[in-house]
Length: 120
Image 1 (spheres, rainbow, N blue to C red):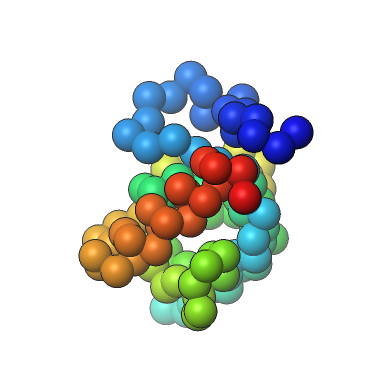
Image 2: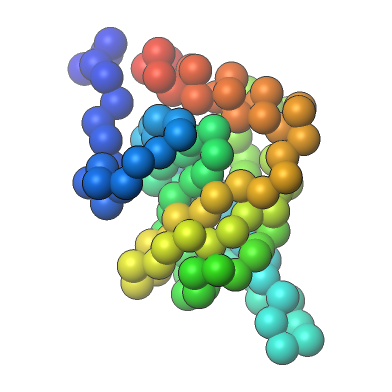
């Protein structure tokens, strides 16, 4: 299966995206501030793009909530810490759009997506 193009995610295939999505299984830590306290959820990703990530979490978030997340990306020496907007939820499956990425964060995401696109 080497050299095969990444298969599109059936949940997102009907949505127009600025960037392609690539299959990626990494650990996620998501924090959301609610009712005066921080709620921490763990999860696993299933897809990554330069502008967002999709994954399954240990709890539910609501579309429109802003969260902070940590991603242990390949090719990066330390976890990427970003803010993200919850774009959708289907049960425990969530889609996030990254917010206000630094140039270095954008570069890291682009490099990882290039690697995933090449199938390495």
